[in-house]
Amino acid sequence: MQILKQKKAQAAAAVGNIITLIVGVGIAVLVMIFVGSLGGNVYSELETDIAAIGANNLTETFTGVTLNQSIELAHWFIQTDTLLIDDTTNGTALSLTAQFNNLTYGDNGGYSLTMNDTLYGGADMQFTYLWGNADVRTSVQDGVVAGFSGLEQTGDFLPIIVLAVVIALVLALVLGFTNFGGTRAGNAL
Image 1 (cartoon, rainbow, N blue to C red):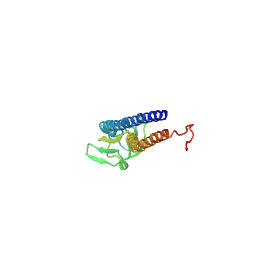
Image 2 (cartoon, one colour):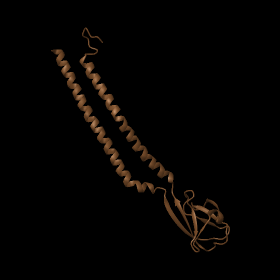
Image 3 (cartoon, one colour):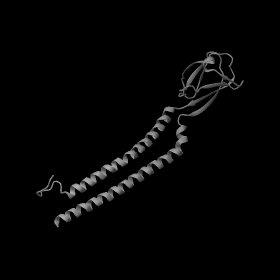
């Protein structure tokens, strides 16, 4: 009779462990669902703000200068191939390479351009360019994608983790019933 009581206690412990496993898996699945859905909602609400990082479209007006005089832009971080120059008096777009040279870092923290044409002295002109660091936007977007990929990968491995715990519980239950490692004579193991 004493052996039956030990086996009954071992079965009760195994049942408790199985219930704990079921509750734990349920909680893990709910956490993954809530983290994924809340993260997706936050991203969808902030997506336009994230896309605007480093994409500041600016326009600066200035008066055209004569040959070999410099014009300074207000910002220093102009994105590559976005600088456009227009003669607003005549409504013509100017070539950055034909009418200007020496795009260098200016004294006031912006870029400096030197005029190499005499046709635009006194004309109303404007610069249009994108200002800001696009690498920051790319890093934020890559971080969001990596976060969702990590969540997806964790979800992919959850069944394997549950299977491993179930196998461990079954082995503990079976080995407990066989009194593995006991001191009784006749133990085959």
